[in-house]
Image (cartoon, rainbow, N blue to C red; front, side):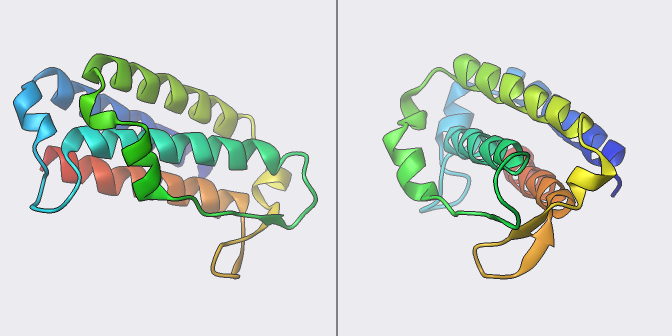
Length: 149
């Protein structure tokens, strides 16, 4: 996908998720989507954590030494310590929407040069900022499908 397609796809996913949450009961979003898995609300929390971590990456790559080393994060620990299950869904959705609107803004400011900034993924592979941004949206889509379907 080119950058414009990535941004438009993320915007569409946000709209779909927001529409779904607005029309869904609280009891439906607090139940795990599968036994032993996160609830839909916790998945939204995970998407917030992903957004925070990726916004940091997308920003730091602009001024850190290249290749930029992508550091992983403790997904389970963040969901648990942020106590998303008990948080207000309206507040979580507001945070998710605002965070991703800024991510889309930051994406729109990238140049061909910055999209080619090299990164080192946690598994040691080399890639670039364009891949990282596209992968963020692919990951977001995966979880939106878990929530909606």
